[in-house]
Length: 154
Ligand SMILES: [Zn+2]
Image (cartoon, rainbow, N blue to C red):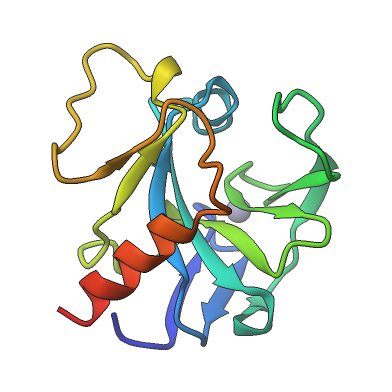
């Protein structure tokens, strides 16, 4: 995966850049993610805060209140012109959960796992080699990060 990576919202009002290697990429099948994306799941790219910056525009934020696992305040960052979700920002976390679907180059993206599979749409077919979690990982996403690093170096 080549750095920097750039992306933006659907209308172009917001552009961003990723300058540090992402920690992992996974699909989130939670009901909240389905609602957020108006789709079956979100693609979450964990990016160190220092490695993410806005190049153009800035997001509007709202507090996500319905996450069943949320212990810390979690903000959804979106474009107030077109509504595209850019990232989720959990207060105190060292990384942002960037919506990988916003990247300009999505061809190089290969998620290493799936979380909240218990609420996945029943037509979704998971790759048997992927890391699969019924709910949120209880290891601090360690295995997902390790698998991602191994894939990056393969
Ligand atoms: Zn926009």
